[in-house]
Image 1: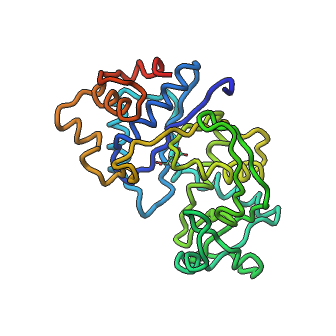
Image 2: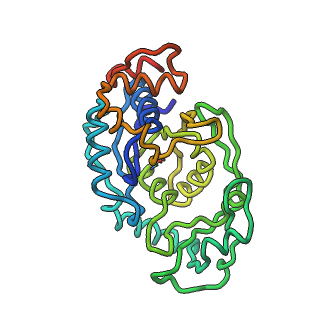
Length: 283
Ligand code: GLU
């Protein structure tokens, strides 16, 4: 466990909070609190087409209602453009950045690596000038990234084979999650990234990117199980029936909602209320 523990809760304001977020909050505040650490709150509104101020307001209100609070200043990715530009400039100076004109359908046609699309490097030698309307990619080395996840033990990933050269800004001009989350975790000195298993495959690429940006010691990672809608289907923000808003409207209390998420995830073995102030006792 890193010392001191500094973690973050980083929702994207593209929908309302659902039980999956509640479970992530239980882990983030629970594991961090059990080690006397601190939690930062970061709004991951890098996708300017999908992010909405009303979702941000609802997320912050639901978090406060649940009792998951941070005394640290709130960070919004949409206000950190200059930070991301300057990180990109450092990578560009190292010759690692190129413009990409490929569409998603062209990349899908080139095939997948496992369940994800792998960019085959089509534009890496074209020398296209960077300009609005083109994507921006960072060249990845074919290295294998080895890390010890606190829940999965030792993992090895080869990002260049999984996803190929990393998209850092899309053709619409949005910074990508992989790029900005890695920069923010570095700049904010986050030492423990706690998130769902659906992001485990992103870890190697974030470790490599952080190294390219000059981070000498990557954060530690803990990827936790997800609450599934069915054995093969994840909960999604469009599942209104699992939204915190709906539970509130139906008269649930915050400890009931937290207890329900903890039970579904197997953190407790019989139904009972769990207050946000008590989640560290689960770890
Ligand atoms: N913004 C991501 C989400 O809402 C969280 C990513 C992370 O914790 O690294 O799923």
